[in-house]
Length: 428
Ligand code: HOZ
Image (cartoon, rainbow, N blue to C red):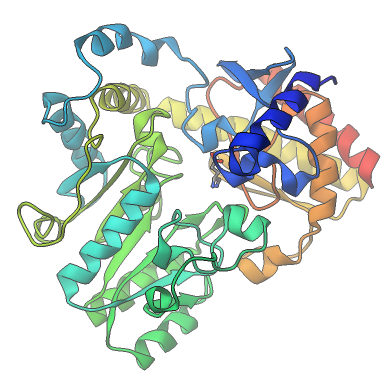
């Protein structure tokens, strides 16, 4: 497959953008190849600058639930843009969006819109600290909550891929109040609470998607709910890639566990730069101008983002079969990959949770960061390139997820399973 144009653009890009990209994972360094520059997307496919077509399993890292450029979503966008791009003043659609979110997410009475998942998590922990009057936050190894200073400790995603356990430029003092525990390990959390009475909250991806896909065990999440209640700390679910994706009410709905606060990102804007954090009324009332926790933004609740957000939420709400459809598709991939792994004898394991998947190049149980660290990332890199050359766009790193959308057709799935067999066979 010829990617000469992408190669040339990248040569130019590195002169002006650090690493040639605006987010590290996109540089494809973890898979030992150059990045693919995308020209357009339609349905389940993307086309690169060279005119190559790929079945896309990145899906903008989660939001492409309906595929790219879905008509139902795009309808009416022109009229919204004509009315004005941004005002820095309140608009009615922000209220509609807040109401739709409050109506759908378990235990959420109020919500504040921001511009990204990073902003959402950063603000949520500020609220937890402001509300409880305590300082420390527990996060888990391999969970990624964006790139704000105090959460950039032993993170997943790009930090895991590029071996940066904690970023340069993060002052020691800032992370002194971040306690890192093992994912799916309740004892570790109990120990942390036994050692400190200054813990404001626990933040986690209930279904971790940034160290590859590792769902939290139900008992683990239930245990966190109990421990936080017993200790006057808040439980914060980071649902940036699971909210409205794995189910309309996110992980909270699927597990039947109601956090005190939840954070959302790109998915609630149908792919626009959006984020939000919300929770119980008594907690959210502490946010300025009602309370003393400050957080602000000119583009927060931007009318275009809100328009696409409310449209995608409405589509998902009106047709719950969308979720079943995606799960069925993901199951087919899981099954096909399992058979291929057996046939080829490659040491790999496919993990699926509802409509998200990761093919780990390793064996045994995948319960936490220690387990995924043992994966053969060189094998993943080779596998990725083999799949890319057959027109399948996977996440360009072992420690990420494949995202399924309703636009993925039976033919796409067949092609993907066939390509998976060829790829595994070629790299074994
Ligand atoms: N950190 C994101 C994946 N978990 C990648 C974001 C991007 O490059 O768009």
